[in-house]
Length: 171
Image (cartoon, rainbow, N blue to C red; front, side, top):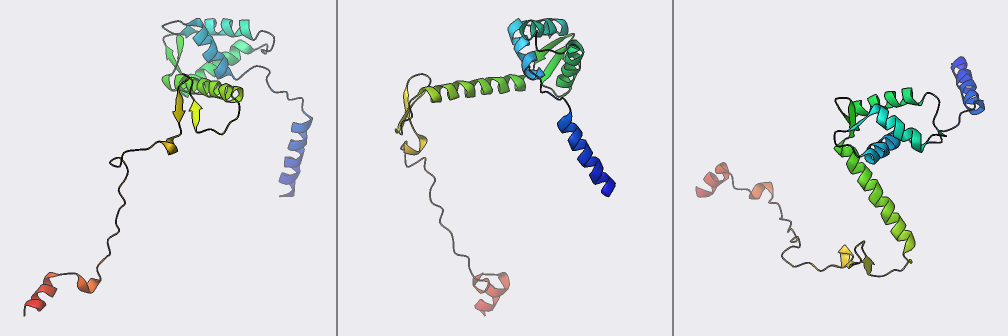
């Protein structure tokens, strides 16, 4: 038990003292998706084309064994269904495209919010420039509102009509 604790302490010291530096480039999935989108090939982009596009953009910050790392990452992304492999080309999966568009929309919204003055008004300005009201302040027709559900009082067991109880009442 004491040996295991000592090993854990030594391992933590080694991690702190090691010369670990985080990568200066973005994550591989981001670089690959950007390269595929930039190439705009209908049938997908080959590994060589993706590597060339990434090297052009991130030439100074990529490691020496970048092409080997890229091939391993591409296989990993195909296995996790973030990319789709068609013959010898790679395409972005539909779920990954959806994630990309959502993240881009969030970035746009954050920029718009930081650009707008902070006012506590009832109306907000959407991207189109049309003023919209908050959902809580929109009046809805009475037919669309949920009716209040009346809670029925349960009958006591003695009040329930059973076939045996009905026979007794008749006689």
